[in-house]
Image: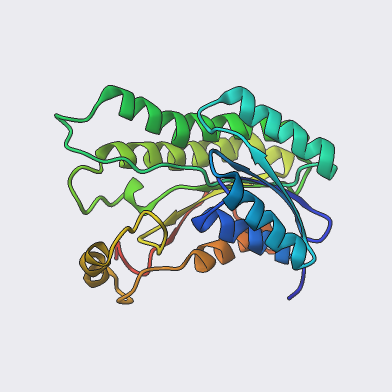
Length: 246
C-alpha cells in the first residue's frame, strides 16, 4: 500500500458502521489521521477507533448528530484542534426512510432533509475555511438521485438529488482555491439498510454484476477521490452501482 494520505487529516460524518466505518478504516490504512462522528452508538464508534489504533493508525470518535449544526461545527473544530488541520471531508452520514407520497409524514420528511442535505451543507461550510489547496470533499449521494426503481423512495431520492446538485455547484466556488468536491452515487450495497435475504433476492436480478456491492468497494472509491491522483476531478457525480442503473 502506498500510504498516499500520510500527513493528511480526514473528517468523516457517520463513521461508526457500514460504509462510513469502511471509509474510516481505509483512509487510516492509507495514512490519514481520521476523525469521525457517530450519532448514538458509542460502543460501535469506539470499536472502529480501537481497530484503527491497533492497526497502527490514528482515529478520533466524536459524538455529533447530523441534524445539529452546532454539534457538526464543534466536531470540525475539535478535529482541527486535536489532529492539526483538515485536508479531507467525507460527508457520509445519512438516513433512509420511505413511504407512499400521500402518507409520508412531514416530520419524517424534515428529518431526512436535515440529516442528508442540511447536515452535508453545514459540514462543508465548517470545513472549507480550514482547507488549503489540495483539499478534498467527497459527498456520499446515491444512484437514486437519478434512478428510482421502487415506489416510496421519493423523499430519499429528493435528498440525494439535492446532495448531487449541491456538489456540482459548489465545485465552482472551490475550484479557484484548489479544493475539489465530488459525489459518489452508490447502488445497492451490503449494509444495515439491506435488512434481509428477501430484499437481497429482489435486488440481485437488477444488478448487471449479479451481486450487491461491499462497503470496502465503496471505501476504495472514496480513498481514490481523497488521494493526489484525483486532482483533476471535481464537480463530478460518480456512480458505483454494479450496473444497477445500466
